[in-house]
Structures are given as structure tokens and as C-alpha cells.
Image (tube, helix red, strand yellow):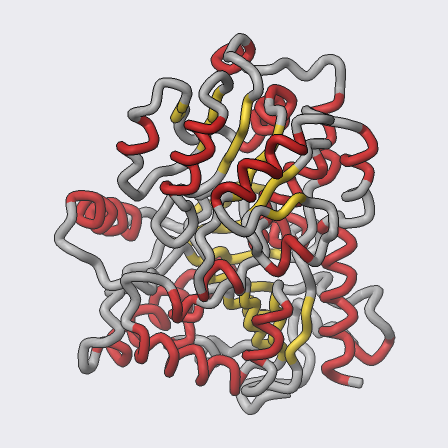
Length: 403
């Protein structure tokens, strides 16, 4: 265990990791530094919901790793963050409590890390006292939280790395590299979701393990249920319907590629669901492109039922080469054929068509349309990839810490 860890019993008890993994990660207080709880459900959300069955979770909303700009969107977000910070900790689901911390995402500015360390420590410690948390297991999904990780009386510190954050546009790169390096070195356990992340992070911490993403299989397979309705806004669109859901941002969405696809399949429809933080005007100017906004997670299987093909138009970059796109497993669990750009963690599944350039991507969509829409066989390929199974993998790695 790392130097920050403590020992001895307390009112909530300590897991005996030496007796196998069955009881590990049960009956504990836990911290989770992640994205905002109100955002789309990501790997962190699924895992914490499972852990909340047997543990109490203090979810710390995003403290940001990008320096804010003077844009209207960033100013609006800053105002929202200030308002949220004035709200008390609230229980959003059974055993999941959300804290809206106040922090200043300007890590490249001299003295800002020290200020954020003090700010965050005071706020998180106060929330822990209110909830009577003690000796928590700290799950850090956001490397910016390295400023305070290890200073909260943690019993175990886990860095769960799902992206190469230091490659994101708009970050203070060297400052984030330094923060993450320190976090890697003091973490008791590092979990990564992609092989490329494993190769880079294990250089700093030999207790680094690859656990690829799971999927909410039971949820997405309902795309195959007769009673699941295709939403009216896409039910009568011209076929084929090429569907995408998720964030549309510069790091994650290739506009040029999707313009090419929309023109190639001009007789059909391109349906885009999700939050937009980039300029899509060249794409949305095309008459067969339908930008329908962010949809509730509960509604996604219905949209999948209406899609003929699920697409993953990630640009190829250091960010996406390290990513393990959850939506691919969700498309597959819904039974859809999937066409993706050449992302290693998609290729390793050996279940998707891969387009290596714009024409190749469109050609793979054409091939996928030979067997369009949800099928039970494609859905069944994800039956063993549940988040419960992934959590069992993680329990094993945590159990090994004290053997």
C-alpha cells in the first residue's frame, strides 16, 4: 500500500483483502472524482452505480482540466459551476451523494495547484464529515484531482484512466502531465481501459491493469424487444438510417468524414444524437442530416432500433487511439452492425467493420447494409461483457493489493 494509506479498524470496518475477492469493495465509503453526474452515463457512472449497491459513494463533480476561454459557452459553464457550488451535498440515487466543488481549472498558472489543493481538500473533507465517511477508497477518474488525491485520509487510492487526457485540446499539457505522473506514482492501483494506455501508464506504476469497458447489456438489448418503439422523429425518415449518439467535439467527431458519408448516402438519413461543442454547420447544411440533440439514456435503445447502421466517426489522433469507445459496445448490444474508423480498441473486438479512409468508411457502410438493423446474433456477442463482469475483474486486482 502507498504511504498515504492507514490501518486499523473503524466504525465502518475494513475489507480483509487476503480472503479472496468476494467481499472486496463492499461495506466501504468511497470517493469518486469524475465528470459531472448530470452528464451522459459513462464507464464511471455504470461502475459507481454497481458499487453503490454495497457501498456509499461521494461523487465529486468535475473540477475541470481545460483552462477556460472567454467563449460564451465557457462563461456560462463557469457561472453554472459557481451556482452549483453553493448547493449542499445531495443524494441523487441510493448511496450516491454528489458534491459540486469550487476549483479553478488553470493548472498552468503559478500557485494555482496549491490553491486548488486547499480549496478541494476543505470542501471534500467537509462533505465527508457531514456524511461520516472514514478511510475511503478513492477512485480518481480525472487526473486534475491529483492535486488533492492522497490527502483525504484514503485507505486505497485507485487511478482509473480511460483517456489520454494530456493529449486533449485546450489543456495545460505540461501541468497535466506532471499532475498525472504524480498520481500514477502514488496510486495503489491503476486501472486502464485500453491496451495503449496500459503500455504508457505501467511505466510509472507496475500495478497497472487493463480492464476493458463493459456494457449495460440488459438495457441495450431491449432494442430487439417487440414492445420497444422507434421514436416518431426518426420512424419515417428515408432509409438507410445511419446513426450516431454521443459527444460531438473536435477531439471526438470527424466532420469531414460525416459530410462525405452524408453525400454518399444522400438518398438515406444521417441521425446524430448528443451534446455538440463544435461547428457542425457544414454537415447540418445537408438536407439528409438530422441533428436531434441530447436524448435520455433510457431512450437510446429505441433509437438504435430505428438505425440501420451505428457509426463511430472518430478522427485518428493520440486522443482516440487511446480511447475505448463505449458506444461501440452499446451499438453491438442493441444488435446493430457497426462501422468505425481504425481505433485499436474497436479493432480488437473483431466485430465491427473498419474504414481506413473516407471512401473505405462509406464502402464498409454499404457492405453493412446487406444485413441492416438490430439482430439477436449481434446482440448476443456482448452478453458476456456486462459491467458486473468488469467489476469482478477489478475486485480481483484490488484483492491482490494486500496478498
